[in-house]
Every structure is written in C-alpha cells, then in structure tokens.
Length: 318
Image (cartoon, rainbow, N blue to C red; front, side):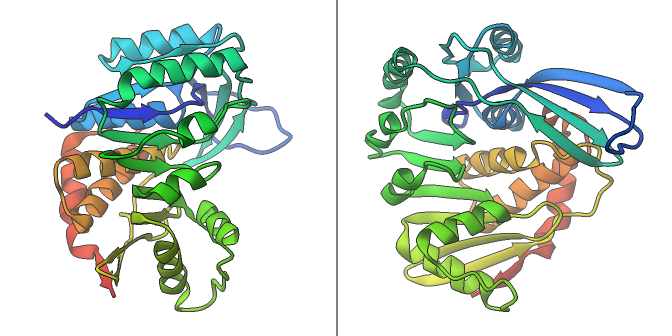
C-alpha cells in the first residue's frame, strides 16, 4: 500500500453546485439540479487520491455549521482526518455549471485566531515526524500564521505544492513538485523578476530554466485548462520539458480538475513512476474528472483508457 500522505488543505469549503441549461448574467434562471458536498482543494485532492489507491490524511480548519458536515462526510468515506475546530463558519463555494462551463462564487475564508493557530501547530506536530509525504493544497485562511509551517524541518520529507501564495519559504527549502496554473506561474515569474515575453517561442524554456536554476524544485508543472500541460525538470543541469495536450472531451464539470491532476501525480509518484509516467497519469485523471459531476465519481477504467491514449502524445523537448 502507498505510504500515507499528509494533505494540508487548510481552507476547505462547503460546495453548492447549481446546474442550469444556459447561464446569462442579469436574468432569472430555473435550476435543474442542485448538489452539495464537502470541497476545497485539499478535500478534492484527498478524495481522488483515495479513489486511486492512495492513503491520505487530511488536516483542515473546520468551523461551525458546515464544518461538522464536512467532517462526517469525509469520515464516511473512510479517510483519516486531523481537524482543527474553529469558531468562525467554514466558507461556502457556490458554482453555477452551464454548457460545460463553471462560474464560481467563493465566500471569504474564516479568520483564524491566535489560539486556533496554536491548536493547529500542536496537532500538526503529532503527525509531522512520522510523515514522509506532505501535500500543501491551496490558499491559507485569513489570520493563519504561516511562520508555523515555514519553520518546520523538511529533512527526509517529500513535499508537494499546489499553491502560489505564501509558499516561498517552502520552495526555497526544496520541493518534489510545484503544480500551478498559467496565471499562478506568471505570478511566480513576477516575484522572481523573470521577464515574461509570452509571444517568444522560447518563453517556456527560458522562464522554466530560470525558475529551476533559482529554486530547488524537482518537478515543475504548469496547467492551463484545455491547453497543453507543460512539465519541466533539471537533471544534472540538463533541462527537460514535456508537453502533453489533454484529450478533447465533453465537459460535465471541470471544478477541481487541477486538484485531481495533483492527486494523480501524488499517486503516480508514490508508486515509483517516472517523470513522463507521472505526467500521463495525472493528465488522464484530470480529464476523467471533467467527464463526471463530482471528483470522486471518476472511473479507474476510464483513467486507464485515457492513459493508453495519452502515452503516445507526449512531446519531449530538451
């Protein structure tokens, strides 16, 4: 069995999903179907990782009203949790799905108090020394004391990040994977002072090389919805780039596609798959997720089918 992965999804949400035939701003809509469930990047990632055969341990802040519902739902799935209970309510994310596109309305996150920060680090310390695989997913809630995790000892750990804000200290220590979208990648380039000439045919190679030379990131992956996925690494100072175009499908709901991709990479890496195999597996998982209404409804058989199609589509550049 794959080793347990500690998932720090510290800003969960209660998801409300509204399906309408056609969404037009400013008009009254008849909702054809409503779905509600526990969500947020960490939860989406953990549920997909469990489905693939992984062993997640979720750590998150849970507030009044929807917090207990999230805890009960995740517990019913058989996933271990290390919740930190807080006074303010867990946020709600309302998503309108129409014709394969999604519009998200995300409430402000709860504000974490100093005593709740203390509860968090006390709980985290109970697991940290025995954990070798840690995945950081998404944003931090308001008031979270990021120095609590910046000061942790990373020795002997494999760190995976699907986030861009307040993660510089983690990136500087060295991570196994940084998975971000194109918008987040441009933010990272700006922070590092790396020029962004996206019209240049050398944009990806020049910028990714600069990032990997400055930060000890083993694998850097940039996704961009239906556009090709770009994956980079430096091996003995030799630059490697893989490009993979996701399979064209009829999208049912793409919320959490990036979280599913991240879960696919976590599982593939835990199984000892190589750089290219991790890219193929994670892309197949993300595509399969978009074909169903909820992240954990994806089919393992469909993932295997997509992997077979994608293997021959990988473009290798050096």
